Length: 107
Ligand SMILES: [Zn+2]
Image (cartoon, rainbow, N blue to C red):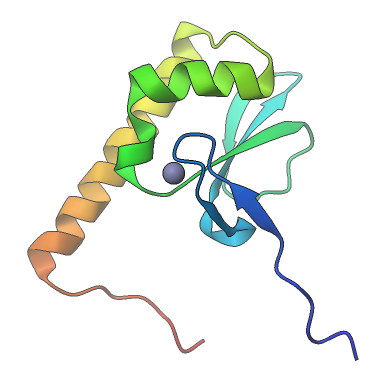
């Protein structure tokens, strides 16, 4: 009864790949500005990106975000996106160095 709930899917605004919503990173336009929304629960117009550094190249992602969110990003918001992209690429580099991924797949 209702256990076969279909997973909501979203499209990455950069590579156009469709993935389950929970695998994507949501960026949301709030009255206070554009925010990264890891919970996916903030109110506002949202856009989705892969957790892949390749989809976070600033000169590509900024215009796509501005179009999707219908807003011009401030320098501070661009810096926030850049910092997040940096963190993502460091994370994936660390995973490559370790040669193994510690994910809790069996939860
Ligand atoms: Zn993507």
